[in-house]
Image (cartoon, rainbow, N blue to C red):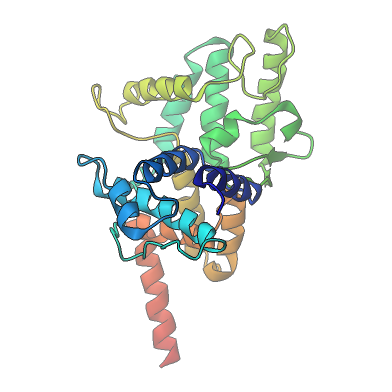
Length: 306
């Protein structure tokens, strides 16, 4: 049988070739392989998998469950070539993680944030103004917006090319004519301000790409300034919540206009870059108004069927 460390490398390479990024999984699996070696084991067993997953007594139950889930996937891979491998069942350490409840921005809140961003002044102010506006009207992930390169933004055709997304896929995102106009003005000012060559569409005053931590820090300051986050609050509305707001507002508009949600939902899922349509269905339960509209539609369908 091949050494576990070599098997970890092959497993990670295979998964990444299929589009999975696995940012923290390799580190965990290397630690697992070292743990098994210390135990004198050359294959995965359920008792050892549990012992490894539960090493940190202070870890939250969801963290322990995720560690065991990592072992489970690796064990399935190993079992194809090593019949001694034991795969931890899903019933072990089952813990359902709770998704953070999204903050749904009102239009007046978005307008106040845009105005506060503009007041930062200079190219930095214009950049953050365009970033907040772009997130609110496209539902892009913050990483996708920050990673947009010059060649990815076709202002003539009104099309963004989002490359290497969360699941390793690329997609086209059309933008409205009003968004084209704002971004065109931004590009003109950016090119006038930046004296050296740039690679990304949204940049700092220096012409360098934006850093996500810096962007989040400025957004927290702006959200406190406009009153949607407490002056000393450690938690509050996030940049990612613009994505949630976009999805919920799209679904609300479809319900209110009598659109066929079942038919349109895959379109929204593709637009947002979701790996599964079920990820988009989650927004139905995330917003009480959406849930109410869905229930009312179901009741009408049920009554018509009687």
